[in-house]
Amino acid sequence: MTIIRANGLTFTYSGQLRPAIEEVHLSIEEGEFVLIAGPSGCGKTTLCRCLNGLIPHFYEGELKGDIFVTGLNVKDHSIRELARYVGMVFQNPENQLFALSVEKDVAFGLENLGLPRSEMMELIEWAMKAVGVYELRDKAPYELSGGQKQRVAIACVLAMKPKVLVLDEPTSSLDPFGARQVLEVVRKLNEELNMTVVLVEHRLDLAVKYATRAIVMNDGRIVLDGDPRDVLSSKEAISIGIDVPKVVKLYRALQEVGLTLSEVPIAAEEMVQLLQEVLKR
Amino acid sequence: MSFLDVLEGLRFKKASSPIHKLDPRVKFALALSLSTLALAFKELLALIALFTAHVPLILLGGVIRQWARMMKGASLFAFFIFLTNFLFIHFHPGYAALSPTFVLPISMALRFLTIVGAFSCFFLTTSPDDLGLALERHLVPFTKWLIERVPRLKGAIDPYGLCFAFIASVRFIPTMVEEATSIVDAQRARGLELDRGGLLKRIRGYVPILIPMVINALRRSDELAEAMESRAWGAVKERTSLYELRLKKGDAIVMALTALAFAIAVYVRISIPIPL
Ligand SMILES: Nc1ncnc2c1ncn2[C@@H]1O[C@H](COP(=O)(O)OP(=O)(O)OP(=O)(O)O)[C@@H](O)[C@H]1O
Ligand SMILES: [Mg+2]
Image 1 (cartoon, chains in turn red, purple):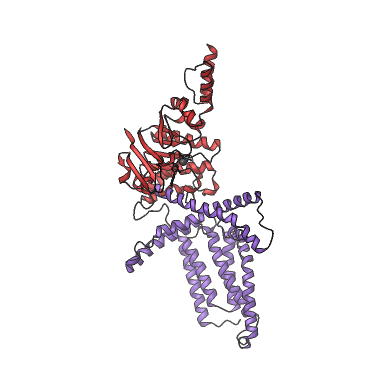
Image 2 (cartoon, rainbow over the protein chains, first blue to last red; image 1 turned 90 degrees about the vertical axis):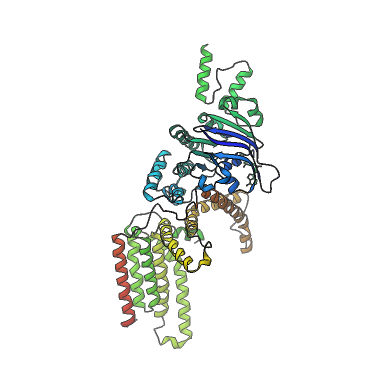
């Protein structure tokens, strides 16, 4: 089932001369894990905002083309309606937690939906356990590390049982350990709950192994779209200035000196295995 | 003592004591009754009794150190109250006939300390979460009632928004303190001097601290609004709440005792003359 579909999506922020995204055509199936990369200012955040209605309902500007998420035309549905279908996790972990305890924060969205208490309790417990913050439920935001905060932020949207999880550079302020934990949680939700994931990341080294599909944007347009291995090992990805994982760079360097491995590696372990194969030959 | 110290002194710390467990409304009623009585009496003996009455609460709540800090801050004001009263009586001999020169000024200072003590006891033992709950529990019906009477106010007051603002402002205090510290450090590293020079120079020194703080706050409010919307803020008219305040047996007992003590005090005030 196609869960996200964009046709000729173009958005210009009011007061801006050039569109931030232009002629975006995109179709995402349920259960995909889509990684979006691209240089700063290429429109990744803008595209995310179109997925939960922040554009056009929160940010003013001119929206052309169409975008459907879980069959709903984003233009015709408010952000609060879309919140049940699309969960959005932002870059700054600090400014998306408002309550004085983890538990109350996770409850926030459900309280807004007017759910009865008993139902809320169940969902909150489930969401906190799913992202591994159940033990932290009584902690205040300032008692949490960045990675914990970001996982709480995921629990907050997860409790509303969305179909799509959109994360805009969720690890940019985290250390590698925290970043990996956050991405592991996202992978788990994708695999176990078949949740569709749209992840904007610049740490490709960490993120690419989780993705089933990679999209590279440049200047407001989608320029590459496909299997993560193909996308990242393509010439364009490097010329655009994507921070291609080191193993992929090594793969290309080996290719240039005439050694072509049987597959594009995306993790160090894979590279080790591929090299061992070659050495055995 | 700097401003941050006072904030720190007022900051609620998680703990579990019989006082912490009391319903916030009961505690508020207690603080309010004590303060009302402190204003109703001017006799030294009565005020000593009232002041002493709140000390066991502080002890039971285990917040004596923070309380002492508040009292230290308040004692300066208390001294001024004493002084103005003393001088006033001294220069208006007519008043001296009412009470011995020292007794009334001391009573007045004690009255102030009792009110400060009662309310710091309330704030030190009540979690902002509980305060928010109490606020939501009563503000929402109150606004409804008000709008029924004054229909013009419809849309002008958003009780849920007010409660959210309260909770969020408490939630962001530690964040902002942390932010302020790191901005001060960064500007110091660039050669900003905050503790040298005359008053004007010092005040000017704070400008490079305040500007980033204000910018951060503006950006924060934008991001908060975005995140709130994305989590369905305002989706239904009547928000529910994960927790609900409920008066327990202990709350009822404390409430009854407070009412009884208050009634007795009022009776004393009306019909029994106090010597001092
Ligand atoms: N609120 C806004 N108002 C006006 N212009 C904006 C706004 N947000 C983004 N833009 C502009 O739109 C373009 C795309 O920005 P966007 O934030 O989507 O890029 P991005 O790919 O997320 O970049 P980054 O990697 O830095 O986060 C940029 O030129 C940016 O200046
Ligand atoms: Mg961005």
